[in-house]
Length: 470
Image 1: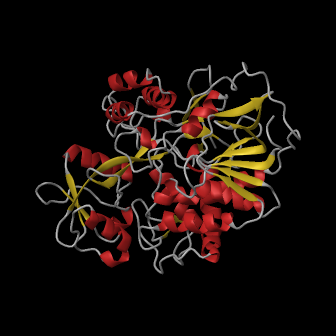
Image 2: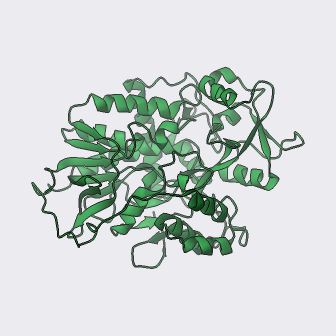
Image 3: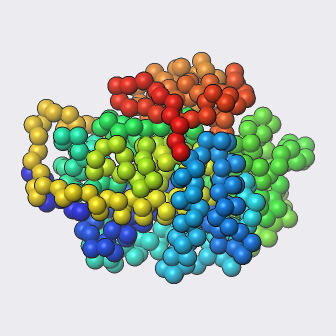
């Protein structure tokens, strides 16, 4: 028999999950935060550059929306972009009020027409934001956290989500928010923590929730060669240049990330020259570069792309609601359509704040759960034994080779047959989109096809369907 349900179960302790927990607790809800690792370790914690938001005197939400949609290659959901850009400035101001020590000057990143990125020490924003949110959650009455506990499956009954199943048994909740991050660590070369292999996508899809846009994995172009250390886009905004093996510039450093990543792959090798940058703005990052054995003051730094951000995920509306009653998703786990085919730099932490808050408010409107939900017979899915997903080095290597920056349909066909559900979904989605758009590049179809201006959506037991979201 499971324990009495909490009002809100939040699976994930990154920026989206913590925002949702704090929002719900402020309204008197009893919240349980479940995390696979140890709070506040998450993809959010490793985010460097900052949070985009039209807080500057020369900026507006409308300008931010234009830049977001331009980066998204005609695939952004207009209503989601409107929500993100209009509510974003207030969410940034709330962080300032909470004590996040943003730098006095806004940063410029690729794809932005204005300096609108709020950062901490140039490249420590994710750590600063999750630290502040985590401390607040730790001392907020009504929020409990359970660490080192994996959500193996959703607990559903009668078509409704009643919580999750864990190795220690079921956890019941009036409403559940998946804020488990993305799947970028399925790729051998990644900026993400090793556990970010798409568990939220896997358990939601298995329970019958729709998933979308899984062909769109954003590769960050400037990651220290041979490591997971991301060299933030703010460096290029401050004048860092990309050089080829002859020491020549070969790309507009502030072009959208998909263009820069492909340019580096075509060159084969590239270096980021930081010698003209005010490196004192990025003290922590410079220390990490030096620890890796490079001197940014005297030599360009070798870089190459790495899988960074999962644009697709569990389909939600503008308040995080999925098509399973009682189940919500926010942050990188969700597919709202806000990023289109290519995420604008530093819109991800903003997405966590805006949609994490919205999901919590909507979740509190869910009807009350049974006082002590009855466990169905153990032979009924999804209560049959479920195993924790893992990603072997072989699987990560396969995903990197077959669904990397430049994609071949023959490789994607092999990936679509993978026994890993998320890897297989990536292959199936990427095969279906036989064009090149944003971060998805097919060597056999290198141009945009207007016939694919929509979002591929898949539900368990059905075929992929192209939908148009407004």
